[in-house]
Length: 411
Image (cartoon, rainbow, N blue to C red; front, side, top):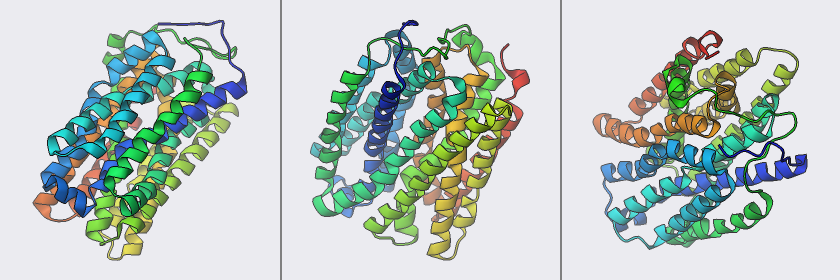
């Protein structure tokens, strides 16, 4: 693993790079969500002659390559550092996003979504590894909360922005503006991020004392894998299917649809940041790190399960209220479920550990569109897909309570 233990960055320099990582995460979610809004546009669907199954496959295409390449991306980051691999992959995914405007067939569209997923695979392993190397553990809740909150700011901004661009300029221009415009990010990244790894005096360099094989044999690892899958099942249901739910169930126009979806993710981002800060504060006061982070995770998953009430709502206002409340509440778990993982498995290789967790967290991106399309076709309603979300949230709670325990962690 490339290491430069003697190098340091000032606090303003570190926070500037965190800001760039957050912006990159916003861009990544803009690019992976914009297709969901294109799929609500009748002109887009007519242009590609898309069926219900076609739309499910297109929504999942990104996640096939993104998920499969997580661990290889983590290995790449562990070996070569963050700066150059991240810049190269950011360039690739931004170009591909812009080129989507020029597709003329389902096959071309599907292929570009696969390439987009491959380019974005490096995003989370790189960000989590850099944060872990440059901030002490008692700051991880806040920094990772901010970092993961930016993934929610992406949909919060992207939902109304994508809807507005499609409405006023058409879907082709939407893809070009969001894709090619993002390339400006590369300039400050290459200027600010040094080559190789950096550490800070109060943070020990992370060494891989736990092999990847031993990590996979540990029940804590599998508890984290299952819990991460369940957490993200709800998130990706909201990201990929909430716009269709609002449009089909409540006949909501695209501009209003984007505004409400954006409000849900804005609440998510705010709660994620505040809960990370609060958990860190409790830990600094002497409360047990594992108990605090697990408490926030379980509370977030439990409150998110109230989405089931919205599934059976008889009024638009009730359905919207529970959509916003349940998704915002999930933010209690966000920074904490990422910060808990290295605390439970401190000797694991950092890039590959983040990649493994992110693999589990993004498998729902493959599963959700296909399951939702199947249940929608089988039942004709939205209740069954939302019951599936509820079941996974309960499984996630059980996984963290029963498997992610200190006595099961490697010594």
